[in-house]
Image 1 (cartoon, one colour):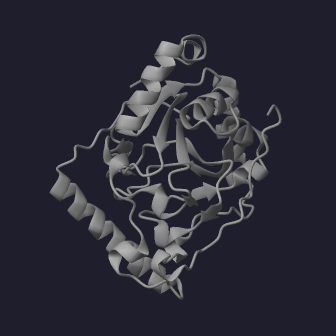
Image 2: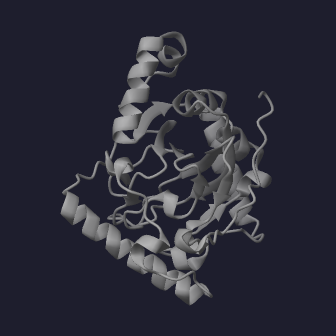
Amino acid sequence: MKINLNNIKNDKVYLDKAIKFYEDNGYLISSINDNKLIDDINLKIQNHLNSKRDIKTNPKIFHYNESPRIVEIWKEIDSVKKLAINEDVIFLLKSLYSRKPIPFSTINFLKGTEQPLHSDYFHFATKPDGYLAGVWTALEDIDESSGPLSIVPGSNKLPYVWLDTLGLDIPKNKKDIKNNYTKYEEYIKKVMLDKKFEIYTPKLMKGDFLIWSANILHGAGEIKDKSKSRLSQVTHYHFEGCEKYFNPLFTRHDQNKYGDRDLNSIKIPYE
């Protein structure tokens, strides 16, 4: 469902319909009309890459091709931060969760990830459950041959998956993390077969953003045209009022062991 942000703010019936769709399907799509901001992000990231300065990227154990995932660049590029705290996005998130959002992580992509289906809730979790959302924004028109974002509508209602679920121990090193994550991905493949879910690949244009709920499965297919970029940014949000924010990769609920996470949150100046 693609929604109009002006209608969301001015029409309660329209907002309630969007909330219901989000609860049932685990996603919403809308648009930010700010090409100047998006162009600045693309320019500044390219300048950053050209400068050959050190760039913080995701650990290689979570990479599926050679294109880097640039993490936490909001600390250096103001336009990345401005997109993460876009007033319309924050309003929509507050409406969906009835709590103040806490933006805490950005990842900027140059190309498709080719990452298999997964849930971000296996990386970022809360107590009580479910207070996580991701906002994926297209920073250019996304070509279908570039390994576009895909989601699995309705998979947000699946039970949460933990190390407990998979019978795995808390990892002691990177090799253990990789082994555990591979078993998690195999588990998700089996779930997809058993549940007969359908994969949906929306056509996202520059400025379109997709909000996904905590547990929805998503990923990116093969890059069919290696020359194609897939410029995009995802920001992850927790929400205020949770007892705990933790990393499920280092958590065993049955042993009461949690990989507690300190949020390095992005301040929202107008809140």
